[in-house]
Length: 78
Ligand SMILES: [Zn+2]
Image (cartoon, rainbow, N blue to C red; front, side):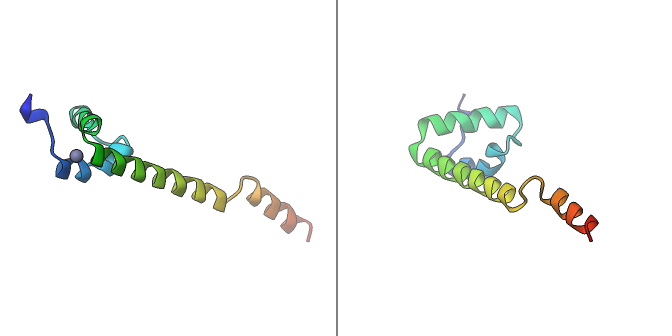
C-alpha cells in the first residue's frame, strides 16, 4: 500500500501529465488518490487545469472557423 503512495513533490512533478491523461494507469490512480487527500496539491491541480482550459480557448479563438474560407473567396474575387 505504502509503495503506491506518492508525496507532494512527486504529485506536482506529474501534474501536467496527469491533466493531459498521459500517465500510465497505476501512476494516474496514485496521483488521483493524492489529490483526494491533499488540499494544497488539489488547488494547484485546479489552477493548472483552468489555465490549460483558458489557453485552449485562446488558441481556438485565434483562428475562428471559416476564416480561411473567407480568405479564399476574397482571393477569388480579385
Ligand atoms: Zn500533496
